[in-house]
Length: 365
Image 1 (cartoon, one colour):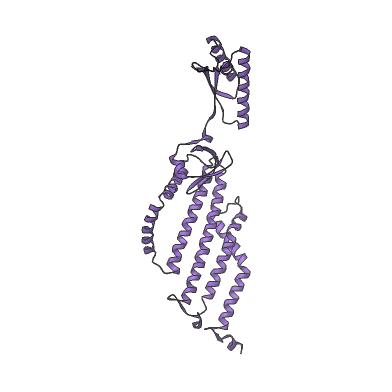
Image 2 (cartoon, helix red, strand yellow; image 1 turned 90 degrees about the horizontal axis):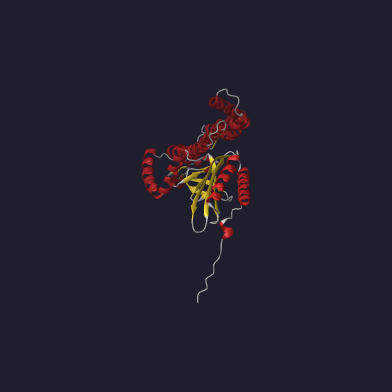
């Protein structure tokens, strides 16, 4: 009697087949966590060998959920494939049978889950490479890792789409590539600037004119580079605004990488009254040189009488400070030098040009 009961046909399948498939699905739901952790551990061993200094929990947090979903979907689809598709449920929709639609749906689900798992593994490899890059002083390596992580994610998504077209919709990929080449040529013409920006991004990463964290001046804008993307570079300006500059302009425009400078330059002009004698000007120039030489934070200097004319005698003062100084220390040094020069001018009783300026009003009849 029980055997006869289990062999009762329902929707083209026996109750025994239904119970077997249901049992397999329930079993995989129960053990999916343990099975997924086992698979994740094996994947980690394949990727890293037996290295212990990488965080295993980081890997599990990234890939455990995608593996669970893949295992559950794979075993459920495999188990359901044992069942014969019921003839009563078979119908045609847009020249495709319901059985073919279900089969294609299963393939799409599997491809999406595999691609999602691969993307998570790429993210984990990027984390490993970032940890290694942090050990070096080259900041550009981190940004290069982020760039290629995004690039390979896009490649995986394209591969997934092609797999779905090939196995779910039974399309000839060679024809798809031919069509894509024509469409790609048309899109290349339409998206010329985007392609130029993409090529410029590769130039930035390999030529390395600047990197993330550098202070740059481009197009009259000064700020810190926060991200270099496939199309544009994001800069946080000194006014704390956030701007986006196309990579093509970052490459083609004259760009000043302020972070790469070896010294900070200070320019100062002093306009001395024409009443000052040549001896006073010479002594003042020598005195300013002594002030700069006495300061150990000033590395190079140049002081000279650059011009004389109808309004003033002009003394140019140029000196350089160490890049290791903070901006507050740099400004404090400038203030110290300026006060010392003012004190020297007062002691020598030399008049500034502005102090002796006269305003002449001519009254016309």
